[in-house]
Length: 271
Image 1 (cartoon, one colour):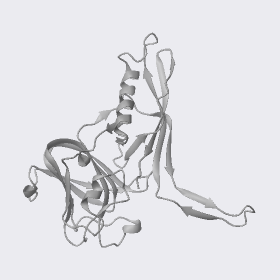
Image 2 (cartoon, one colour; image 1 turned 120 degrees about the vertical axis):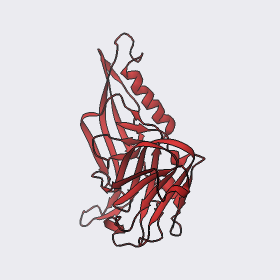
Image 3 (tube, helix red, strand yellow; image 1 turned 90 degrees about the horizontal axis):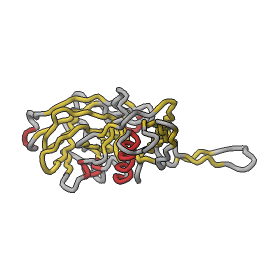
């Protein structure tokens, strides 16, 4: 897995702009991908639309994560000045498809050579189309959030199989005691939980001293300090990147030269 513990889009110096935005769906909403259902929304789909982020100064960016998008294609661009996007130095087209776990359009773009102050998400009406579901045929594009990673941390190892991949469907099933009828109340949008175990090689005489156990505990410490973070599963599927919390306490069980613990990554869907 590849993790990012700080979102440059949420930094104090970062300022978001939108070329067009619908009322109550301003560009700043997309700076908080932990609230993917409070999106930025464009004014229309007939002209080129853009979501711009001023990072405050030139930044090295390793990953741009698009969360809960309402479009199927976009161009991710970078430039040293907002006036240079007519011919941007960095420009990569991306195609977005439905993530199998969250059922939303997501994309984790691994950036190479991005060292600019300005980030642009460009939506071109000749190539971008509205996503299926609620936004199909709508007069706007929307974007639930953007995670901008300045650096990525590779975990010492991947989750071991078998792993649990859960789509949480918030709901309340109600009905009378006799069971003659029932009604389902949908209480929110689906979100993702990923559960598995990890193993770390360690010295039985001094576990946690300069070994993989210490490396994993450093990852756990940073996850706790950040509260939520971006996790790209790094399995060759650019859809599987999520804003998550490390939900369980690291509880290592050591036996000989190995230690093992369970991990659950719980997707953050804020109000």
